[in-house]
Length: 274
Image (tube, rainbow, N blue to C red; front, top):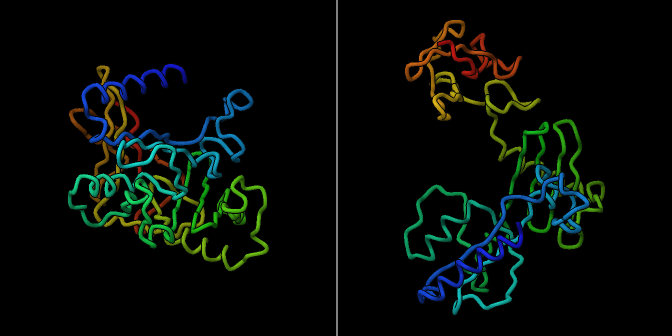
């Protein structure tokens, strides 16, 4: 697979060169997450970083990015600036000279590509992750500090990524004020959801004034259909509901999650009746 990837990327780069487009084309090569655990002891492509895909340690979420832009980005240059997917749109907008839409969380990191000094706010901002697939994990990165919380009832772990990029030494007991700062960031950034309920979330933190969020997820005729619709608060969850000519029966998404003022939780449309 690696050989094929290397070959095919080379074909793409060569085509850009042949067409005379290389100096006007930004090529970005990146990954979405760390290696899967199933490759442990075989490839170990996370190197010495701790964790795997679905972990919030660096081995699960830290990935390299290679940027090629001949004449504008020096070959072999390295930047340690952390970034995330939300930065892609404002960065590409700046590259194209387009106006960035308002209300975005991402930042323009183009100066880091060209080895200029990005805005100070880009260095000092915080990153937040949460992952629900194996319970509920949270992580926060702020400057050189990284906090990891493995479960709602667990304590925060704290690491200095500049001095300890492999997250071996938990410094939470030594720097309680930093832990408090990261916990406050996590609390601020976490948004309760009826689809991903977390123990400890106060009931009613999410708004159901407009109705109940329903996810339709089913397949028919070789086509998979997925959609989210809002139903009025007055709907009867016992009765089937019609959606695009099909009838569905509701079943609880998770038992015990009850929105305020209503007797029934959010629902999955999960059974085709006809």
